[in-house]
Amino acid sequence: MKNVMKWIDIVYLMLLGITLGLVLTLGIIVAPVIFHADSYLGAKILDHYQMGLLMTAVFLKSNYFLNAMAVIIILREAYDYKLFKRDKITLPSAATAVLMIFLFTLYYTKQIIAMQALGAAVTQSDTFQTIHKASELDFQLLALSLVLLLGRRLYLQCKG
Image 1 (spheres, helix red, strand yellow):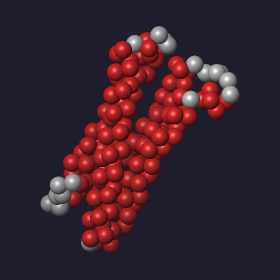
Image 2: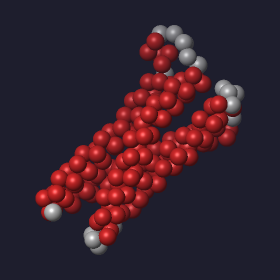
Image 3: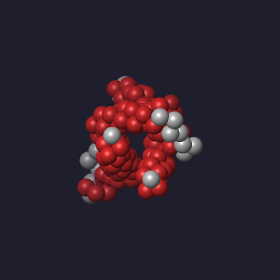
Image 4: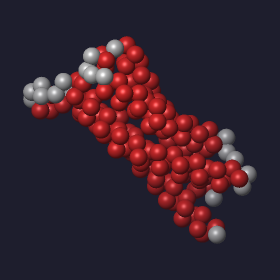
């Protein structure tokens, strides 16, 4: 059983790394490229609203993976919790990651899609801007919690 848990932990660490990579790639690479597409294309082909629609489509696809990862985090960390293997860093960072994933995928994404459906003018409103800023903050907190969770899990794995 101990050998099986070691392999489960290796896969878990890889998935945490993939998830962190996804979050960082979306926030640092994909969003800036999409929202500055005209500088790459040499002409203003898309307006800001259309760029937002493209970014939303990217997030919708990534949300499936993020939701699955939230469930994996819950299962893995609940297993340790049940065995009384409780850590002051792992549990809060895991809980924060799960909360941020579900807030982003189940609340912010749905709110943004609903507002986009009302047209381009609505996406210029203060309400939309506030929701969008909050979703960006949520994604940053997700990245931070994943760094903490992955780092702590790696430390605990190496420590034995």
